[in-house]
Image (cartoon, rainbow, N blue to C red; front, side, top):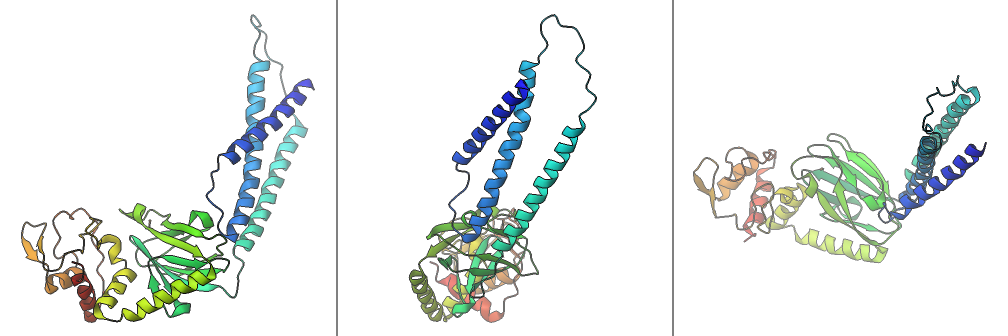
Length: 335
Ligand code: CUA
């Protein structure tokens, strides 16, 4: 009996120390959505359960090793134990109820996280190797490379991929959702804290998966409206060939692989590309004129630029002639 009291006391002490140790490590980023509250609550409960189970295993183990070790010179056999029915019933029933309780709490939590607000703002998210863009159909359908959200209002993300599986993840919002080609997946988020965050891709999707990030800005409703207005004006002003080309390049993720500032990404930069002499992988060279750019957009494998042989080939895009013209008009402006 004395041993059980001591072990019981040590288990509680160890469980407490484990829990507070994990808690003070600050493993979680800021809690920036209402969905995060429900998730963190359940997570915390699980950490408590895990701390207790950890102590329940480790404390009796080490206590037995130390207190019941063989005395010097004692060569007798240990006491023969035949089993303990009440203990076995106990350790069957207890975990069963714990698991059932967590299953219930998990289902309840999921309902909270997916609670539908009929006023939710719809944003279309497009993911592709290796970029994101965001379309705002409620505000005239402008497209942005940054995800701006007003605080306190639920957004419904309707997400599509044009190539492989990606995953939308802003750690501060906690929720995460895969984006599967050929279908629209949805995610509801209600940002609760003003700040700058980052959406990152949480599904290994290719060579530049690590770089598939975009800025997420959560702001006051008034600041959000001001930003929307700016975007709408820019969107209207962008109805020139160069402007349309720039939007097209953003919407199709071209600039995720082809930088516009001279940096070498997955593909050659567009800065200063037009009219320049381009060395090809086969040892020849060519002037980057309209016909070369048109061919490279519609049939990317036709001429591979030297230094980019190892990069995964660009997917073939089925742009119209006008769209190709707009893209080239945009590339011409990048000097
Ligand atoms: Cu997209 Cu990883």
